[in-house]
Image 1: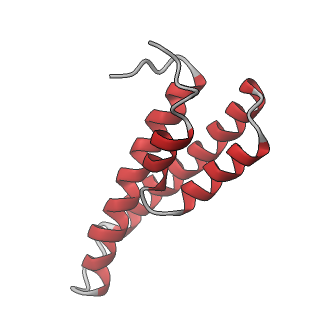
Image 2: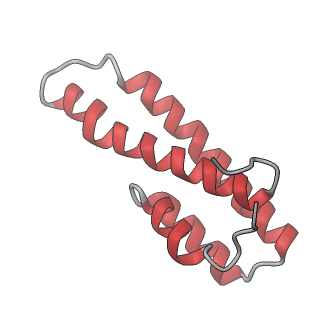
Length: 102
């Protein structure tokens, strides 16, 4: 389990949870609502996803300031946050050179 002490590790951890919440929202909660008419999971999963998304954006901006990332990298991180599970791809492809050793 990664340390939560550095900005990059926080970004990676929040990104992973944001991707999980995105997948749960789009492939569990929304089908339950729109196919079977059961909206029980929409509010809690949607709220968790929204909070995690805002935390991911905040950590990406903090990382941009703290590590002097290029605006291009920051823009790609913001774009990746919009795509379902895109934060996992961003973690693997964009942040691999910035990961700090634990």
